[in-house]
Image 1: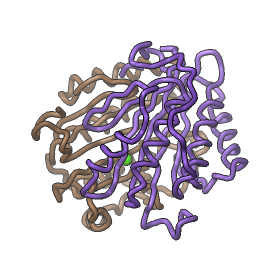
Image 2 (image 1 turned 90 degrees about the vertical axis):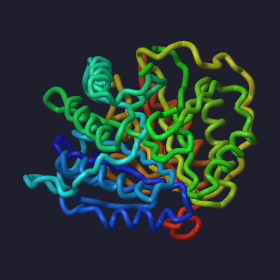
Image 3 (image 1 turned 30 degrees about the vertical axis):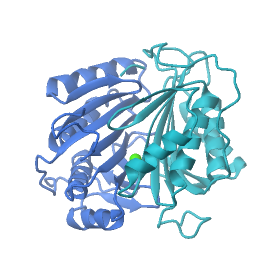
Image 4 (image 1 turned 135 degrees about the vertical axis):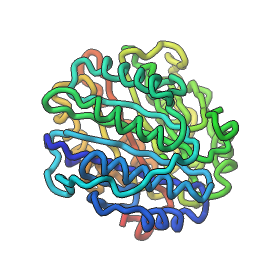
Length: 197
Length: 197
Ligand SMILES: [Ca+2]
């Protein structure tokens, strides 16, 4: 695990189209999305992108939207991380002041679950409960559950919430915060287009 | 998020067969595996199982093996959790002294990535580095990477390592430990059956 005290935002994610054409679906999304403002590496299990927060969130949102545009059931899971002591300063595009590269449409209904892990905050549970309240205020809260919180809505609204909550969870001088997201799109388990069940 | 100071081991996971027959593959695995010693709930994004550690690990290992037995590319992601302050004592089968229910074959080659998050340990990075060394000792270490560590080998060896390392990471009086795993089986990105690339 290479994980310094930089403000590099990292995200390790996987897209899982539940279809035999999964390779072309993922490659198509990678080709259509502008990833020029994030550092990227793909291996046999996942892809990691690193850079400024807005660009990292924009890249993942756009990739997820493109990969879901075929209408097939797709899962996406992502782990966001910042401030891990031991992170290297390299492998990142920092100081990019440009506007984000990809326009994000409202997108399909997504049902997702997230967990927040503030690693070096003694009052980390307060941070978690505050961010769950934020989800309620933003209108994307779905339900409480063991080990996670259900978040749903349009793809754009859900990712906007995650970007805001990850920024707000970075409290203190050297925050090390991890956030995991699991997302389901076009699921046969979704009862209709608008509700998770 | 409902997350007490109990020793209930919880695992929230998803199986993602990259095939249009994903529903029958998952339902087939659920039907074939003995899940009688764990509490279980499935929603539209993931499944949570709770109980004694050996039974929780046995259930997930068996489910993953069965779901991969069709030979199609499959991803599995799981978050293990113990000791979250705010966890409820319910929704669990504790005090089950039985032997584990499912026999685990050696299974296919799996490539995976894991991260360990000890939530209330001031020396949590030491725990992480120690457990990475354990992977090397057990012969399942693949590579170091941003935000995770690559673990590979036979399905049985990889899950045995995860069970051991999750138990060993529970240090102190009220450990709250989270471990995330992402796994890929029968991936076209695996260069041959034995190596991750
Ligand atoms: Ca996944």
